[in-house]
Length: 189
Length: 189
Image (cartoon, rainbow over all chains, first blue to last red):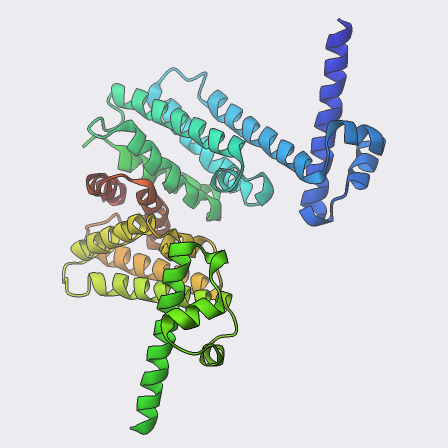
């Protein structure tokens, strides 16, 4: 019980450090953020902060990794309650498109940008995202809702690249239209 | 006549400098290239080289700009002889897809990478490429070969992003399949 409480406390402090650092980076730019500022804004001592992280880069890297994990979690969860594989694919496509579009505002939190540049957790996330998309397309193909004459992995790669167009779209309606175009590319002949 | 000859000579020297620098950069990596090496391999004196360019970065930037211009020229020329707008669009899509796939080998010459990161000439080239694609789609839509219910610029953005998938494709056949998928997304309802 006691160790659980300690773990919980440590996790709460860690989360608060990540959140504070990210907020400061988004508000004032990454280069201006210092360990002292993070400690002050998170309401902890500098010595405590250094017990958790050695420098700002490591903190922002950890935050980044957490964000990527959260986004992946949202994508996995998005269609989980839907029993129809075709609807599930639609939900996955639209959730990812909206995520990419959101990312424009805080380009540091951008799953798309993360996926393009970044460390090993990003490569891992990209891999997971490809698997998720490939599985979802495979399931939709199995019920005849998506063309089954091409490898699901190729269709997934097509979807992920085409969805990148969502980053620069100006409206929800345009995202909706993009999803329609992409989905038409998947239609059985 | 005399000034024309001088211009031609200057252009030939300049081209040779760009080519030499690019070759050295591709063979040995950008950071290892020096002005002395470029002068030696291009068969000119260092003093002459400095009359053309102040440093290696400027030379590679100029080479880059030339490459982007050449690629754009190839894309413009690709469908020029074809009178059918639908075929012209197919040629544009496939030429660009093959260009992206080629780019994998020399990723420094990559039009795709250039278009994503780079200076003002890259922004300009991206703009030109969008216009070219939008015009080509508009022309195909006008003869009923592409859906006309959506803005051509949105369909062009979809195509350009989806074509990025060509960069990592392993075979010509896979490129052909990707083109089929993308084209299906453009089909009139």
